[in-house]
Image (spheres, rainbow over the protein chains, first blue to last red):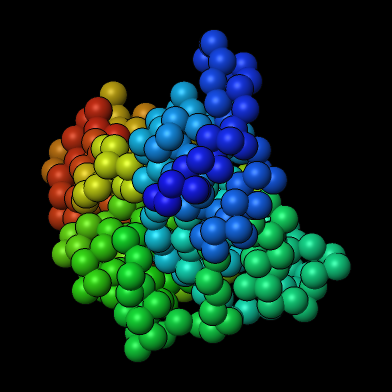
Length: 278
Length: 75
């Protein structure tokens, strides 16, 4: 870190009461943006450097007892790939922006239509017809401009998936339907990175973490499109599965125990949550 | 005492009223159970007994917790 940036962070930091008691130095979002611009760095890197100086960006202050300083720094320096920006993808993006995952690469070739409004967090009445990646960028700018979001307006294929995952330390499967999920699992395995996957139909869903070479849900579910075409995907189930996936992403990125080798299945109607060994 | 049966997603419609305590015969397997419930075999992709993934020929006995999952890929 340059001495001038370190001095600037210390200079702009101010002391305030901390949620866990006492007081300590914090850095406001506007100061993060200003320093990022001045030093030609992404905001998430300024925030990571601040945390290393034990200056907490105010944005993450309320997470500090759940996500340690060291783990938040890891998240801010992580690079992940998010495939799909529909129901799961929109809800995941929202959570990743608020958690402060530094770099995200997201892909979706679709545009919003009226039938997405029942569940897809990025879909709005005034955004119908808009590219999903465009909506994602608008949301990122609104919620957390410190995050570096790279988008691709395309449906990824077995040929383009490896390039898309290149340089990322984790892949997130937010695809709709079963057709591409196996290809994504294979591409993640070939890239040598973990995959966090999840899917649902109606009130039932599942989440899994698949390490390279392991059996995953995509190996078992087949390629025919599943029950979601009949049952749809109600918002509570979408957001539940997305939340389980987002917390597994945090577990993987911070080195905490994960679902690795298992699959969590749930049904919100029968209040079933069960972790199955694969 | 029978088995505790869980049918997920589209298989929910096959769940019998006594799914919490469903009687099984000696030598019952997932395959015979699925047939007894009237579920087409191809509609069952993941099955589990007591939180362990099983296959169609796995045996079921009284007291087991059995789950049947169809193809599910919505997102």
